[in-house]
Length: 153
Image (cartoon, rainbow, N blue to C red; front, side, top):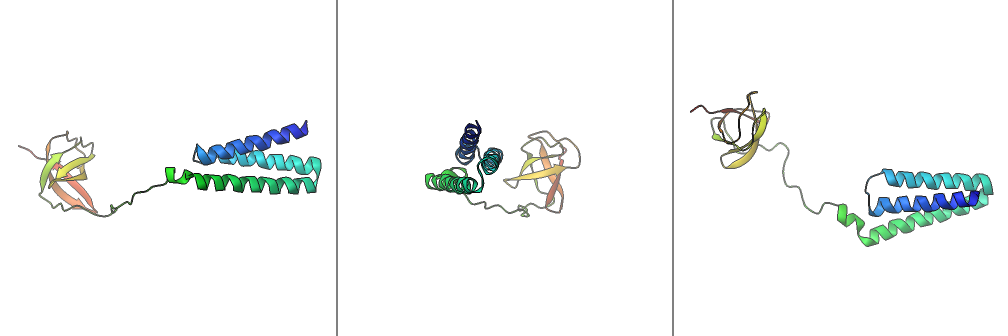
């Protein structure tokens, strides 16, 4: 009976680790598979002794290395890795000056998107709600934050 439990734990651990590598990237299924393998190793060491435990540990390590090698050869990481370069900059303010005008691309509650000098920018109002399509004017720029108000006609 103990042998069946150990074999079941090893197979279950292998399935969970393969799911981690090929289907569900994350951490949970691989952790559960590793826990199943550790418990199987514990049972082998306590039931069958050190020699059997060492052999099982070596076999599981070889099995894990084979799984990782198969995953690398099959190109699993190419499917989940980013292949584009990020070219934006964090603290870059577009060429916008106080007094420039434009229109609200989205509703401001109080943040929203606007078109100013033919560029899409993110801006904030002074707490007022500005509807999409309204004419706006830049009243202040502080700490790379564009503050706008609705133009009165």
